[in-house]
Amino acid sequence: MKRFIDVYCRVLSGLMVLLLALMVILVFGNVVLRYGFNSGLAFSEEVSRWLFVWLTFMGAVVALHEKAHMGLGEVVSALSPKAQRISHLIALVLMLWVTYLILTGSWAQTLINVSNAAPVTGWSQAWFYGVGVFFAISSGLILLVDVWDSLRNFNQPIQPKTLSPAE
Image (cartoon, rainbow, N blue to C red; front, side):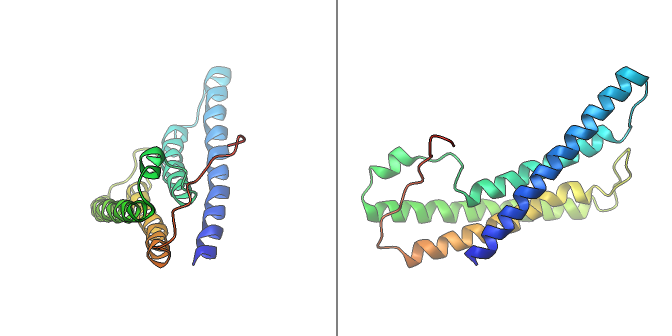
């Protein structure tokens, strides 16, 4: 499962590069058209906004997998190894609970907005709100694997993630 998640996050990273490139092309192209040719692409702002939202949630999934989010490493490292494991498990369970809340809320919003069309593109707003469902499923899977690993390795101390100077 870990290998699947590694490959999945590498694919997401590649998609993030593509989404960012598309955003730059749309916004820059629209600026050139507006100021250079007194024209523009009506859909550019809307599509760029959607791409940005998807890019943000994809980045959050990749950051969760790489354990790149901010943490309380100094506080946790002061605890005993057993207390570190317990606090880590509590944190994972709380994150799973929040992920469940995001899933149920996003699913409800997605269903509500299936028949609502975006003003310019006419695309279903479900694609906009569905990003929360994507995020919740992806992060939930990562968190469940982390819970499993923590339970399996309960008697071993947690290895803190250290950043190299390049990071």
